Image 1: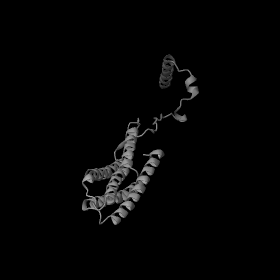
Image 2: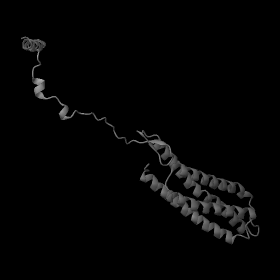
Image 3: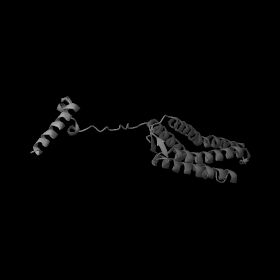
Amino acid sequence: MEHPHLFLKLRLVIFSLTTFICLLWVILLSCLLFIRWDASSLSERSFLMLFLGLDVLTMILLPVLLLVKFRTWLDGARLLLLLVCHIGVATSFAIWAPTISCPNDTPDDRGVCQLLNVYIIMASWVPPSFLIFYGVCLSFYTWRYASQPRGHSSVDEETGGIQSSSWSVPVTESRETPSIGHLPHAEDLLSPMPSTVERNSRRVSVRKSRLEKRLP
């Protein structure tokens, strides 16, 4: 099955942007963990490490999907896995963020800590937003091409089932034409058929001639 170039280009753009955003997010999280390792609490460090591992997984999984042959069910399954992980971790951090203890040394440190938590919440929803948009496009693409009228059935290489195709080869029955040797001659068709009376008279004359020869 040939897929439209527009959809494949859109898929390439979304996966590339998501991978690039995850790369930036990994760099920022690594710097944040290095700078605020002593000032952050255990729960905050745990969430940051979880975000870091999830973004690394996304950076590996999306290029793999671009390299392998495109299959709708394969994209849908891995997309669902990434969405569940990203949305689950982002929602958990958004719920847990108000309870994260910030350092009480100075009001500035406490304000910086709270501001960083808000930025982390906002940034954690950027990759799943791109993935949700691609999921909507993939669902529309699957529905659009599944509802098209189809012709004869053919084996689908992606699903292993039977898929209809709009291209059909008309099959015409060949009629055997008699050869020239079997055709009746025109002279035979035009020649008059002897009547039954003439045939009988010839037979009678032949019999009489035979009887006369036998008599002494």
